[in-house]
Image (tube, rainbow, N blue to C red):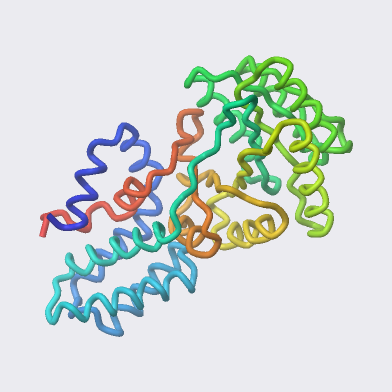
Length: 324
């Protein structure tokens, strides 16, 4: 059984396969369907083929370093096959993409067994951070966990009230910071509320300013210090929320945040609105950070745990139609 056949078999058993296929439709058109157009003139893993493949990878926002690595590995792997069919070359390509993602194993999400689990959500304005907080909370509620919000994005106009509105809709208590006030003070209040009420999950919507990197670093460092004083080993998870439609610009944001604090994972929003699905590989290759969740639609249930096999199948569906 070929690698693509195994991928299809694994995908067929997934409960959220329809959401993945729908959410990655634009990325599949940019990547999988563009790859299919190379079959007509395919004459092996030649320099010309690799040039065309590089263009497709770059247009999918894999990034130049990751694209070069994929092509180098494919060229080297192809030396084992004096003659190779297009579909077998595609098997090797998708298998290499999986290997690159898995080169650095994903650390599991941390849950605190001795009190509230504190999750920091970071990200710039417009990334979908506050909406993501609500979607995460809804997901944890469905798992039977109690949730509270801390509205600590005190500098963005309306951010506190936006999160509070989500809290009312989901019946989740929201500890509000003071507009233009100290985000760390809001987080201290949130931690104390979570401890007092034995809350399972505390989601902190934090500030995300990039205008001044030094201020950002100092702000995030302070938030980490005060949280650790209130709840041991907190924050347990620090996730950067990135708008997938920004592609390589999002990767640049991730690099700044990763230099400013200890990120433990990424949430990619608005994946259904972009053809730049290759950003998943670029993030993992460049930053070695796991993508934990992806946004595949507007509804709360469309924030899905990231699954590598589902991702790879969804962007490449159709490359192995006849099972060769």
